[in-house]
Amino acid sequence: MKFLLIGVLRAYRALISPLYGQVCRYHPSCSAYALEAVTEHGAARGVWLSVRRLARCHPWAAGGYDPVPPHRHRPSRTASAAPTPTQGA
Amino acid sequence: MLDFFGSIGSFIMTPLYFAISFVLTSFHTLFGGIFGPASGVAWVLSIIGLTLVIRAALIPLFVKQIKSSRNMQLIQPKVKELQKKYGHDRERLAQETMKLYKDTGTNPFASCLPIILQMPIFLSLFRLIDQAVKNPDKPKGVMTETLNNQFRDAHFLGAKISDTFVNTDDNGVRLLAAILVIAMTATTFLTQRQLMSKNMPADALSGPYAQQQKMLLYVLPVVFAVGGIAFPVGVLFYWTTSNLWTMGQQFYVIRNNPAPGTPAFKAKEERDKAKAARKGLPEPTTGEAESSAVATEVEERPAPRVQPKRQTKAQRQAKKKPGS
Image (cartoon, rainbow over all chains, first blue to last red; front, side, top):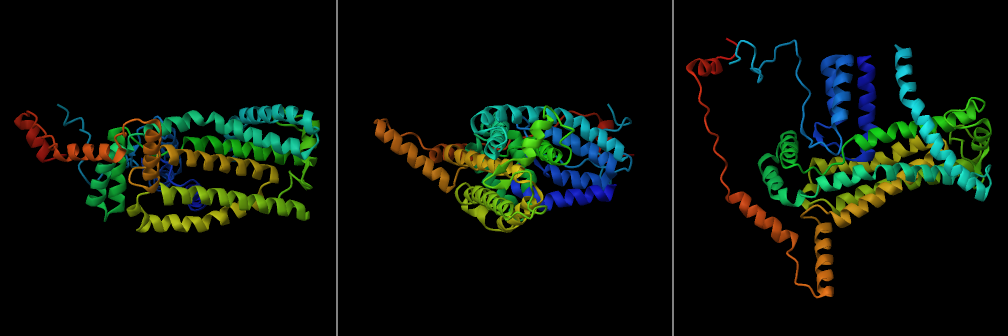
């Protein structure tokens, strides 16, 4: 399933995306985001993240830098920006 | 698994079949009255009418996009600064530029919404034609069996509009499909070239980004050719009309809202000056002068100092050793 989605996304990015030029108000663009999200988080969560990103990408949104979030369960290598419960003041 | 996707698909597509077939048959009632309900002209004009309705419905999105890109001129100096700073690192440059767009509430891009909206519409038109050919006795949306049969058998310039390039032996269909593919390629090519040659600063036209853009111009005809032989002629009319609309829209934007520091921007200034001279008004303050005034203001303003926050000793130590 995951690899099927990756294939579809790659095909879209190679063939259909060029027809429109850059339209996305975010970096990475929605399709790049979807590709990374599915690769990193698997089919289910990847699709969920991508759908939410597409819903965010409308002309009333400010856009901006919006990377794929890191894994929730696997602790990230760098210190997390969000305070953990023990650090809460 | 497949059933699940099937039901999501029909959940989305069923209302679309009704909406699309309603617009299509409304136009068909109009044009059918003039050219005869079984005529190809009536059906082709109905498809073109459908395209125009859809693109007109998307105008509010377009207007919003124009408004949100209006201040591009004011932030141009900042964009240049970023280019100087991160020019060697494309990824970082893209991140920082997007951050700037966000912080200033100015974004030149259209967003993905118009594309996401148009894809299912395109698909449902394709399915309407496809099903009119395969199952005319099971009409979709507000189509009827009579309409399906007319739609299936309609000929335009001697070519059956429900035929595709690959499943026909009729050279008329092939010729019409080929002409439409050429028209689509030409319109998209012109749209892109207009964007590149008139609405991009000269320094953006070199480097890897420009290289990518040039590759694109070779990919386009291939994509349209593949689509053009697989889709029925009727769908190709939709596609071509939509591309024409996009081209017109693009010309409008470049003429009235050109990006600063580009040939189109200079052309607009000249026109504005000429207009002012004709009307005997004092020369307007040009955009260049305005933006350079902003630029000096931006440069002179020192970076705001970040005030240190008051913290307890425990907080400071917790910060030094995260996770401990």
